[in-house]
Length: 178
Image 1: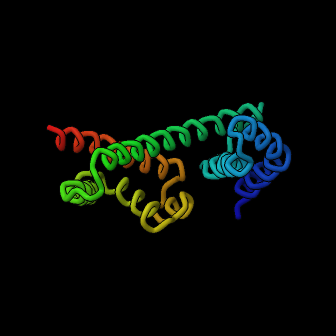
Image 2: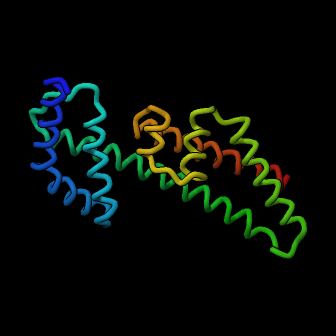
């Protein structure tokens, strides 16, 4: 380990020891869940660790707060996209009787289109991250390591995939009712 890398690790260690409790408490107030707050607090420090060079921080709490807030915004955006996609699926399902042959056919078509969309229409990296997350059950950290990208990039890929699926589901629903 080079001396600059050792110094960076020591700096992050000191930041973590000094500010982790404060950041987690702040996130608990914002998120109302101690487990999610702890995860996001750790993600904030992981983001700092993933930087090629540790910046000189005059106001470390301000820097950590901005970083955590950006991660929180990304997380909320992802949750909104996922929730809207689930609502869209629920609307599609509730529009049909479960005994109806047309319903079964529509669900099969939806699944086929979703798979085809993921295979043919979505860009390779977003598709790969989506499948690793949803099919293989991998964490963002595991996906980032496997794809050799940052966790932030993994989240961007997943948001892109979910947003695209959501958009296509609306198109499919409109086509079904046309």
